Image 1 (cartoon, rainbow, N blue to C red):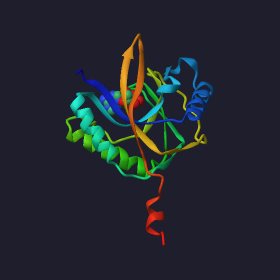
Image 2 (cartoon, helix red, strand yellow):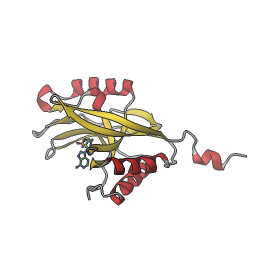
Image 3 (cartoon, rainbow, N blue to C red):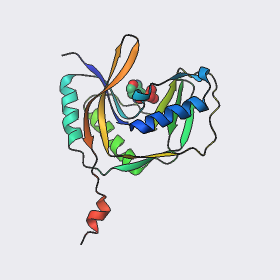
Amino acid sequence: MATQRLFFALSLPDDMQQALVRWRADTFPAGAGVPVAAANLHLTLAFLGEVTPETSQRLQTLASRIVQPGFDLDLDDAGHWPRPGVVWLGCQRAPRGLLQLASLLRAQAARHGCHQSPQPFHPHITLLRHATQPVALPPRGFHWRFRVSRFSLFASEYSRGRTRYRALASWPLSSQDPHALLSAP
Ligand code: 2AM
């Protein structure tokens, strides 16, 4: 079977997608860049690149064994990377759970031959692409919070001029706080 272009990511709840799309339209001028479709908004944990079915299966098995509590994600930062032409939304302080999950998935990917960027992980949701000209960023003060209780493996598929991200599998993050377990009578 052919390879697939895969990545592990967090998807956004529907109401968050809609809120971000409205905020983006109010915040950035139409010519600032190409908006990412609401359904495609996501936060990448580990990019795998072109992957064989065998490697995909192995990484899915490892992902299914991850035991980690869920966490809250605060989206309260925005930035512009002019070289890749990306305007992004992120967090001023990434939660430890997010960094742990990404680091584990990236390490497993690297061990299975998926090249990982030497750049430090900078969690972000890409809002606009092809934003190569200077962009005025909104002043700090915006803030969304959502609970992350699962992560997914996505395939990036391109057809009829459009990129679509299709979830292949999802895994829950446990709802229990490990500290609560430790202090239980
Ligand atoms: P981006 O949003 O910053 O462009 C699907 O393409 C997802 O994988 C996107 O979130 C994209 O990040 C990320 N991605 C694509 N190519 C990548 C690469 N070479 N290294 C790391 N992440 C990449």
